[in-house]
Length: 378
Image (cartoon, rainbow, N blue to C red; front, side):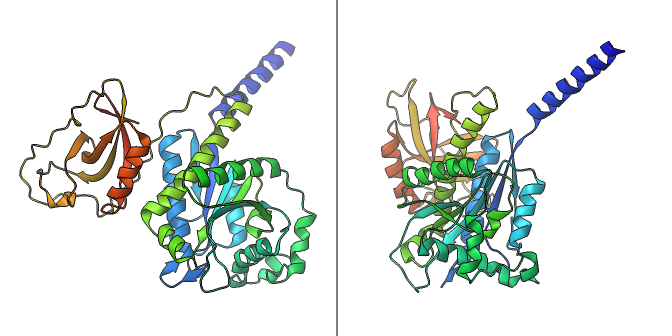
């Protein structure tokens, strides 16, 4: 009988280990504001739209490059979600990370302030940090019976924020680790001014049961920054920086879990352009093209070659197609997605980034792709 019980126990433990090893890492991506809550608005620029664009782009990157990660969105459309509901979504999903995405502003109509910053939960140690928290928390005023739901918390009163001084955050160390990684990549990957990692009392972070951060992408009342953040390319740039920080955090997490961590693979930083003007209309009548699929005839054998992809078409296009908007010469490669057109060819990452900036003036969604021996490398 003891042997049977012992065997049963071992089998239970073994099955539990298998179940744990097979479980996915869960990250909840929270696009701040939405619906009747527009967040900060300056002219044509709306915070809720910027936040959602970056959130969806970030989720797309994670889903494309990590099969062992489940992405949960608090919202994927323009809908209103209460602050406590956002935390409930994360807790119910048993998330490993919670990333809340916002866009900053000041009370002035315009500002010269610029740059991204990343917050973790805590007592605001400066008036500026407190003002950011008050603005983000004021969304609860749009909720029914908020005084009961949030236990008398008044987002407009500095005295209400004293509670955050006495709160102990079990996940502060991990939250700070993630915040530092992402903040560094805002500087190195997105090339944005660095405003550092900060602390403030955000209600959306208060009840999350996992490492949690809140990101302020930039200032919507800074004309230049608002213009950048409102473009798809700007949103993809910011999403790439957040993803880069997430990737480093995930690598360390896996190591601590005793998982085998392979050397970094080349990430697929392309974005879904099916709704973009850069996708060629399938009904366009064009003759068969004689564009070569090979890149320029420099000796690239065994070397990494970079190009800028700017256009997808369901069929070949002629050399002088107006769809290229003056780019010449262009090359293409073909896969199940169709004919994918590229411009430029170099082994220098710096050079191809300069070329990408030029192409982005004509195709704002253009991105860099990598080749080896004439074949696309992912």
